[in-house]
Image (cartoon, rainbow, N blue to C red; front, side, top):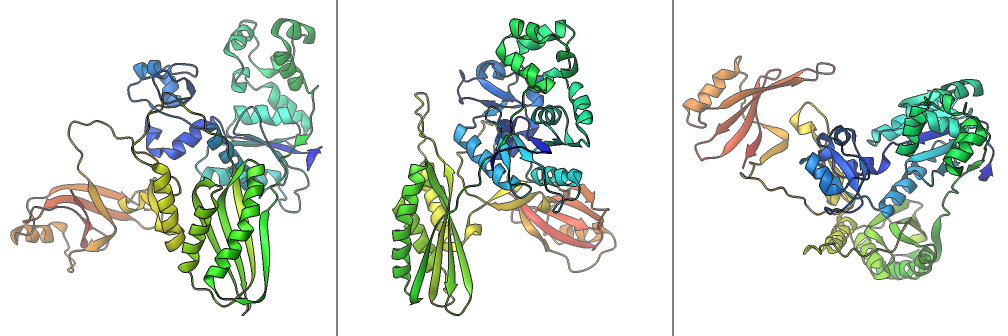
Length: 499
């Protein structure tokens, strides 16, 4: 519903959204100063900088080369407009679970206004509703704040200046809190901020005390518009983004269809007009879902994901054939629904200074897409680091849908690689009371040389306490192993090897 007036409104703010996307793409950068640049070249411009970078005096507008001179360990990368748009669309679809009317900010990616009216039957408490939104985005590793109030600008200002969840029970409470918001939290022009600071204007409350005509004459129409928004003199309804219309085709069979080639031929004929529709909307296929109804009453579903959003019909048909060849149909197909999910695409702009990589990432992506189509979505995975106490819990395998070029660093000595087993292997069958007993017997038997350790890992007392004594040992065959003694189970385990 577009142009709707609402009684209650919420603002969701994901601060420095492009920077958050970059850190999600490169989570290992979180311990370094990090910035988003417009291009990964010395003459590139810093667009966003995290707190660690700002402490080193790296600010937006600075040249990338100048930022590196201030912090040699700076990590920087680019976030394209298409990546931003796709992430915003994904967040809109995620937020639709909580409300149907959502308006993304056109000027500030990462800011969303939500209709919070009429939700009492689903969510009796708006505070709990906002908490569910905050928790959902936090689980996706996004930093965010949610403010629930009565006006567009009031919820925006509070969401920009606070973290967590804020709810207002009355318009007066919202106005009072909005008046205390520091002007610097709104990201206004630094020159204007300095002028207002010299005038003793540092909050929105003191800003709206200035005379209206004086603000317009001295600072111009843009600042005067901010002034009128803060005073509540400008109002505009929620301009919600309509939910995307499903792009699908349905086929009914007079007789059950068993032949794979005929199924693929029908899918190809139905996909062609769907892709034409996407092309007219400046979109491309990202995911294809096939839903089947069989003559025995059962239902089935197969989902395919392309390496990159594409309109290439032969490539999509090839992936479909691979998936169906690896799937055993329950019976003859009587109904088939083809559902296409798409993303907006933009024309790629050439960069004169971009170095062409000898590695063909699109070809690799297509190869991985074929593997997923034939063996399932979990056939191609990548490891993601996470916080945990035990070594085997510090990473998790996730499906990998995009390829990235490696970014190796020059090192004097190549690092040793420690390969670990996801499930440690038992190496002692007795239960020695002291860990040194069997360790010494390993040495006496000539199985291992003098160990290095112990390195103690303990934790989990809030569920089930774990204590392990880790050692590095070398076998008589020259292998370097990583073993530990589990004090709770009183057993020795092999956890990996160093290569």
